[in-house]
Image 1 (cartoon, helix red, strand yellow):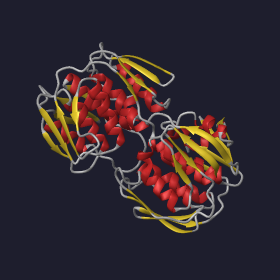
Image 2 (cartoon, rainbow, N blue to C red):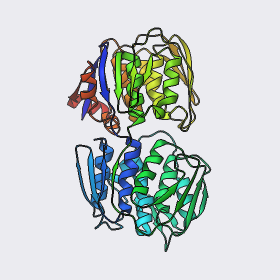
Image 3 (spheres, rainbow, N blue to C red):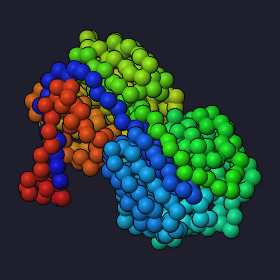
Image 4 (tube, rainbow, N blue to C red):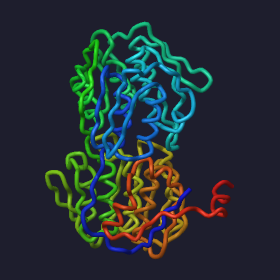
Length: 427
């Protein structure tokens, strides 16, 4: 196991490039199961979640290559192999295998998924959708069993706006007989990306990106080539990082429309932000002003950027309230930031941050992916050296982070944990 060491206070300058969208990738890769011939996806991020999905597709008989961000999946020899344990348990997005395998084979056995621990994230809306399409769903010994004689289109109203449920129902419905209508669907860009792939394969999906998605079932889906959208959360993380410790940073390979809620908040804080066609320039921020944020479903402020943004607020003048309406347990990074001299406390679904305060380097631990990003930003801002453990979380969503930040001028490197440190983590 490794830790990340960061010498704070180094001014960051230059250009940093954004990879393909992690939250798209973890749905696009399972979607390839539905094709009858090879599918090529370009621009995938080189992160642990993608390698895990590659292994799962190989487990069910797929032939998969993944080099330089390009994955080629040949689904011809795939079978409805049960996946009750192993990799599937470690990956939150493994639930997309349910919709894809149900759509292809009319049956699936998938272990209940893992991933970051962010409080309850039930899959009841996914199951409601599968049942509406004609599947029988049971929970047996910690795995979800899905069985259907045939899938028929249905009208499905989601009680909660859910990206996962919207995509999963799309995957299951593209080969169902007749028309499926998903009402109160999520509108995230990643849903449009998945629908674009499926349509390129021959599906008939309309309305992705709106709250009503209509799907006409087709008999067959063919292979195709698809380029993933840029990762708006990685882009947002880099914009926040530039505001926190930068002296002029260009964030390259972005879709500015996807970042409007963050851009508005940064400008409200007095951060200079200039928008280009596919890049954003974040200038040096002087005299930051505290602002309140509330996370909402897209196009609102993303819950995935709440934790990094909380770190930036330690540098702002005044008190700020950060409210997370999506995940109640997404404040585990607060205690770690307090170790670094931050003045903040959690009250229910909100955190109160007082600033400005100078952060001090400390030994901290990432409890989840975006908490890890928040602690890296804190380390770049702090006086002295910060050590971050829990890198397995960061590696799930940020590829080549050390290399990218080093090119901006950060003093950052990875080190093996000592036996004593490993013992401390185990205890």
